Image (tube, rainbow, N blue to C red):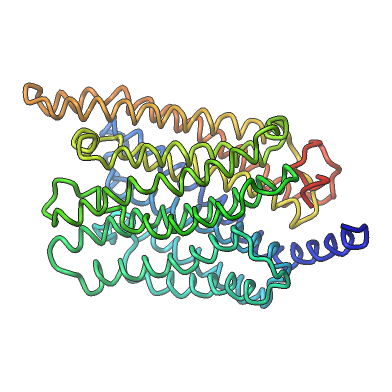
Length: 478
């Protein structure tokens, strides 16, 4: 590529970043605030698991409400705002086009966060539904749906107006997720809450939605970011472009059926459960494809992983995706499920996917994106390092505690000689370990939030303080 083309590319990318500036700031700041709120709610609910008298006199902080508020604050507040920021930015960058009509996008983002706020208040005040992952009161659902449509359509418009002839794998994943999310959300709302289906169909729909929220919304966006940032920061192409498409289409084909395996032993048709188990096992294919592509691209560039804040988080998330997916396929087997079902292992598995995979990749993405939106360097290397190690340590402790404790709980529950109360008492040390992990995660999130607000509110355009390829001054990562 000639120097002239390099210059033109630099100007074009700078214009793309500038067009996304205010919407990106809105979504990143909103995501950060929801992360802090979700952390506080999660700490309270975790502590209540082994100390039921904690805040027991406050009706709006009972475990059922606080746990549901934590879940919805994280998935609709933190996760979705992070997706809107990262997904739209990557799409605009790869399409080499500006994000237009920014005012409407910002208004849609504001109303999304207003809707989530009202929804969380509704949960805490007792107006929640009884459906997991859909606890937000139904009266706020139309505002959420309209807000999402106005945000999601921007990704489609940007893709339509693309100036680049080549379609990247990250764009495939983002486009797929932008269409999949309104599909699974609207079907679940209609079939469970607005026009309820009868009998076990509701259970099937609930697990279909909850599993696909992770697999067809969070997972594609996490993989899109990994496919973008790993080669971008390292400065080399992805290991196999064509192999990545095999991963995309097998994910689309198999994941939507996999959630039914959670109903093993329930009053559902045997063929539906068998289909869910088969789809879960077949998920090994897209997982292996992603693992080969990501890990072979990083191979020989471990120094960059150590030095780069973005790569540190993204590679941690990519490794976690491989591990959590293999564990998930194993958990779908009947012989394993009869032990892991109804235990804390299932909760640990969910945290493994949402946090160790998706959230860690979003952290790394924001570390790359935010300096380019506002043309400033991250003010503190220490806070970035603190964020990574406390987050990695915290989620590792949580995953190990819930997986090991959950497995032992399952074995004990299947032992007819043990009283159920004794089985529950045996989980307390593992639940306390989970609370300890929450303190580590809280420290990590506070460090992240301080750095975010520090860079956003900083008046001066500070010089680079971290000479890594992940920052604004990177030769490879413009």
